[in-house]
Amino acid sequence: MKIRRQKKILELVEQKVIRTQEELAEALKEAGFDVTQATVSRDIKELGLVKIPFQKDSYRYALPQKTVSAASIERLKRLFADAVSSYDQSENLIVIKTLPGAAQGVASAIDQVAFPEILGTIAGDDTILIIARDREQVPKILARFDEFLT
Image (cartoon, rainbow, N blue to C red; front, side, top):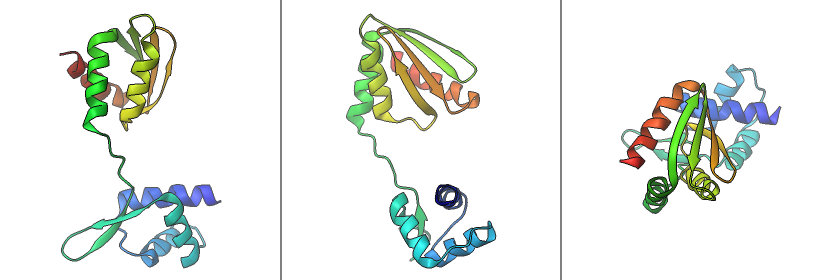
């Protein structure tokens, strides 16, 4: 129940403007969850939700931002230019071929950047399997990779 409720909270915060715990509790009740303010408060803390400015003199709940340093992106660009020989895709999967021994470093750099379209990576010696969240995300991922190689 807790996992379903917290998943719903994340969905609500992404889709609606939720300014207070009371608004969140009401939205959860409308979605069929019987919650108290104390439960909502604990969920907010566990999920790491933050309040961000919204309009004039107002705040709303939001998901915490994952900050990616410029150095992480530059490292990935360098690794791509130096080690990636090719890549191809099928459905929501992307296969990257690298120089021998380089796949794990490139995959680690991809994971470090944490592209939201990428569910995960698996690396061998010279091959990386990237799982995209869905096949509609693949062109966006490939466009980024194309930029890294230019």
